[in-house]
Length: 231
Image (cartoon, rainbow, N blue to C red; front, top):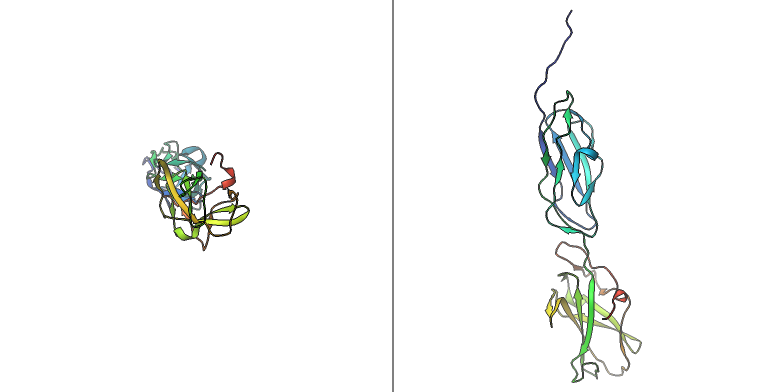
């Protein structure tokens, strides 16, 4: 009696290697799906897949053909060129070696914009002084270009002699202002009855009525004005 022997000399292939999201910002993840042409047993995503600028959680499967895992990008990084790479170290159930493969490119921007500096001046002949109806302008510089959803709802909180006031954004987009890059002017018109020194608030910019301040990737502005020095 001769036993049954099944011969399989066909090398397995990668049917697909995809990511659900290839443009990642802070707080986002991407589901990675790897589909083989055949049942595999010699595969471990922890050792067989290299992830650039992030981490891939151990991939799992219910049939040893389709494997799924979650990719989490590294925080505080901006890189437009990244791929996941499958090495040729895996095998099918017989032991036939499989080829290497890569995903399509994915971009990462997990760096949130911040306030770099704030300068203040008035339109008075002496720009360090202001009288009633003069305009006080706060030029706010950001770490990168940002867009305000509604200019009138984004404001710089400050005080005049201890009285709380707010300066209103004059644009929804950053620009170079008096050689200051990525800047937006915020203006306040001096009201009667106020006296004292202008002092910045210690918290973030005021964002009323769900107004947003976002970079091109959609990351929201972070940080407080109290962290600034030399403004």
